[in-house]
Length: 403
Figure 1 (cartoon, helix red, strand yellow):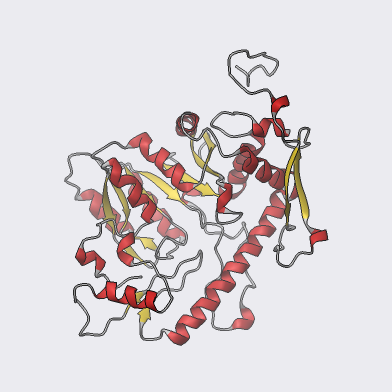
Figure 2 (cartoon, helix red, strand yellow; figure 1 turned 90 degrees about the horizontal axis):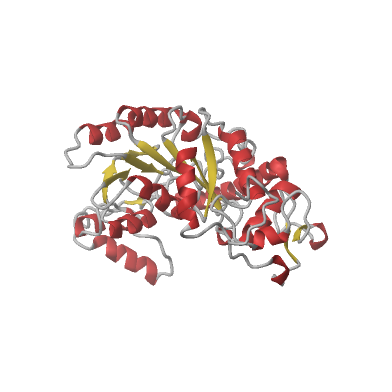
């Protein structure tokens, strides 16, 4: 009612009166688009400020007040505009809804379709928080074989075709860009093939893509020709959402990897009947991201950077992570040659090592625990591979030679 008639006087909502809020202004000093804080003089910082009577976005009272599960309008509008510009969904009735990040969004998408005893299709190595989320819900995991591009379409088709479980498979979860933990990124051809399998078996796809904007050029040992062709927004590998003609992709996006994880700001893109239900779930759980976080992001995106500045910022982030990738790979090739195998990632934050165990160590029970203990003793911490396995922590998985 309030949205339909802004002049409506509500006496029933139990909203604190804005005049009692002790906040007159919130803000942050932010590096200009395309620059980093370390390389920006204090006088050149942008002043992102939200007051009780802000301009292009809502006043501070709106951000500090209770709100609905869709998010403050200026924040929500940016997510829709950005999604349209980058992904251009191919069906009409799509929308976005706010989240606290992709794990929060995953839980809400999953609960729309799944209940205790169901089975979720996942990569054979996958994000540990997903495993930790579904296990207490008594949802089983069906791992699907991967290669250097991530989930293999033929393997997904095989699992679905030969499924003998009592309950139908309904959903596949994947991280298509810079997959956690393997670093694999799907090509557009791979995404089309995965989507075709999903159509064949009528699967919903959860496209968890927090690293989507951290794409960069393939690794080259020639340091003089690095960082010359960063994708920005215009040359990113198209998303599964951009291929979706059926409304079967639920896409999860987050500001965590490209602004800061402490903001706890993200969004979900899906058919409107799904985002409406996630909105209602928000209203009985998180309500929406913190008003302070939404205010800073909304001001930054709508008043300071805009879409063009946002793209310049993403190029800067891509360059930074490409430099870190290249330095780390250079060091690995120099110092770990013959000790590990790995595929150099074209995006994200992860290298997935297959340890080249000596023949006499292969198959020994507990060998990877000894490798892990030795690393810790030498002041290096890597995550053991078994922690990413949907098969659990049985000894055979613990001894898989991955870190």
